[in-house]
Image (cartoon, helix red, strand yellow):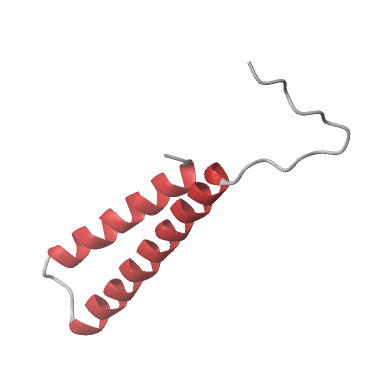
Length: 70
């Protein structure tokens, strides 16, 4: 996992813990729920971006010859 995903995960866990405490007023709880949704969307976008980068083939660079088949 990358630093950005670790940070997003930690922030999401901290926010969820605050929600579970039950000591929040409705306005603050709603704001934290929205923050959780935003953090989860950010983490999802990070994972999707890395997955696409890992699956995309590298472009053929000019002047490169294909490797002979074994």
